[in-house]
Length: 205
Image (cartoon, rainbow, N blue to C red; front, side):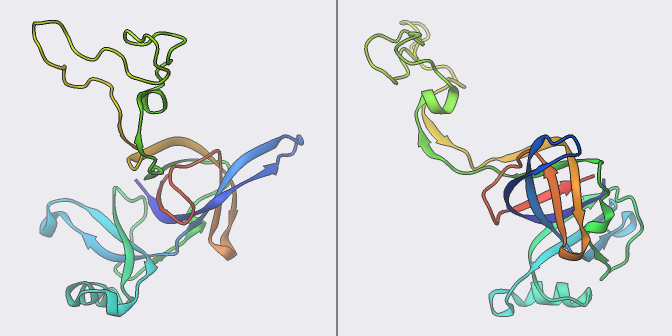
């Protein structure tokens, strides 16, 4: 599946030909450098390794610098492999946002915003005291009963409880490409994509 690494710039909205206001996300997609070509004979599978966003040499290991030097490029901050790439590419080739066309649909993968330690109402949508979730009595946002009776005398695995929320890999599918600004390497996609501003995202065709 062909794809590109990008950086989420932020959200805005544009008007379509009917005057409807459409929320959209602006992504700086590429240019990405082919830093390695995986082959079946050597690696056991076929894939393209792409690198995005230049990295300072003093923050890179010697092994990483040697790896990127083979591709004739500087060290990169983000490296991702793409299998079943649609076009044939060679080591050191540059892939930019022009691979996308307006109107097509893409999948965007990113790490969702971390929200820290949250209770059951925010994390799982429990109803609170009004809906008496899980034996709720007189406390507004408490989880209520979590255990069974004297048998099995334990809390079952998978019980929805308070805990860390966010910071997970999220893949949003079938987002329409509204605009491709090739000269600025920008991709305008309908709707929202996971992650905070300036976070890395992976766009699959």
